[in-house]
Structures are given as C-alpha cells and as structure tokens.
Length: 265
Image 1 (cartoon, one colour):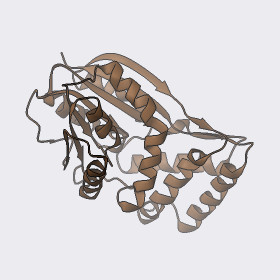
Image 2 (spheres, helix red, strand yellow; image 1 turned 90 degrees about the vertical axis):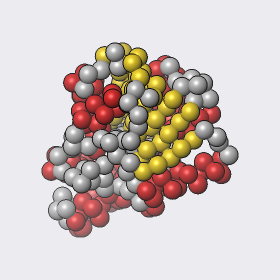
Image 3 (cartoon, helix red, strand yellow; image 1 turned 45 degrees about the vertical axis):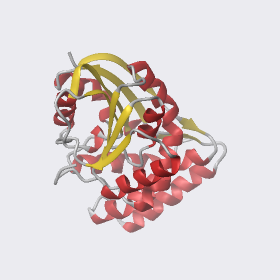
Image 4 (cartoon, helix red, strand yellow; image 1 turned 135 degrees about the vertical axis):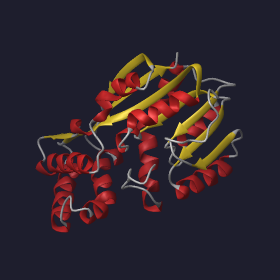
C-alpha cells in the first residue's frame, strides 16, 4: 500500500488460497454488508479487493462498485473473473487505500477485510476512507485477531506458527491481533460506531481446516528471507501442523474475525 507496508502473500501462487478465504467468510460478509445498508443504487468501494469476490457480489445487488488493490496482478485477475461472470457496473484498479483517487464524499459504502491489520497506519487508511464517504456513509471492516488461532488437543506447531506470525508482524510495524481494536481505530479516524461483532471459525475436518497451514507455506519464503524463521523450522512447523490437520480428533480454530460498521457523521 505504501513503500513501507509489505504484504507477504501476493501473487499468482495465492489465488487458490484467496478463493478459500471467500468460501470461509463471504456468507457472513454478505449479511454484514446487507445490515450496513448496501443495496441497489449505492456507490460501493472495496479496498484490498484481491480477486474481487465481494466486489462482484455487491454488483449483483445493484450497487455501482469499484475494487481497489495494491497488486496490479490481482487486479488483472479480478477483471478477468468479472468478464467470465458477465457482471456489469464493476471497475477494478490498482491503488492505495491511503490515496485511493476517489472524489471527496462520493461513496455510500466502503468495505475491507484482512486489510487494516496488514497496514502500518490503519487509522490514516480509515481517515482516507472517511474523506471519500458521503455524509451518512458507512465503512464496513472485518479484521482478524490471529492470537485466537489454536488446536485442541494442543499442537505446539500451531502455537509456534501463531506466535512467529504475530512477532513477524510486529517487526514489520503491523498488528495481526488488531481486529479487536478495529472499532478504536475507526473512532480515532472520526467515525461513529454503529455495530460490532465477531465470529470464530472452527474445523474438525475438510479443506478449510488446513487454511493456516496453507497460509504458512505460502508466506514461508518471505518469513525465511526476513529472518523470522529458518527453512528447517518452517519445514518442522508444516510437518507438525499437517499432523494436527490430518487428525479427525483435533479441532483447529482459525483467527477470530471482528466486524465493524462505522458511520461518517
């Protein structure tokens, strides 16, 4: 998003993982956006849109929509998926949430998921969204608290992965536990808080159970490069997490997702 914010999971290798994120979260996201007032005729912008699953859904609700992402490669993929789906009133473009290139007071609803926790300046990002919203417009955020990841029976690999990830975020100046503070960031940015909630996915079996193992594998090269862990340790953690994922008796909890609806006065 800026020269200092650095996302470890960009690129073509991450497309399947982004699809699974959509499968896990989009049902709750759609309910949240409906609660926030997204409807036909509204001007909607998704920041950090990735492959555009939420953006395209908003278009099917009759909204006029734009998806903005820092990755030009993901924007191109989102455009291709939109053409395949033959959905109108959709624009995708590369850009920064800090300087989104939107007219002041031009949008009704903004949305982001898994964005603010990757930013060094989440309050500044929310201030930029505040500027783009019309009076009475709403910012909708879903942000993670990675500290809620666990396995039961306990998995040392899952616990160490979680702690290494959080520490690595701190080293980059970002807070992967920040979902629990998203409402405070929004208030500091000048918003009125209308709604807060949280949900916490748990899995015993299925493709989604191993999502965090998959995430570690995709981020692993970047984590090794920046010195957060060695290749030997990465391989050890993946093996331990595989063991937990493959056990039908082991419950794996994902991060807790915090939801915020905030209004511009």
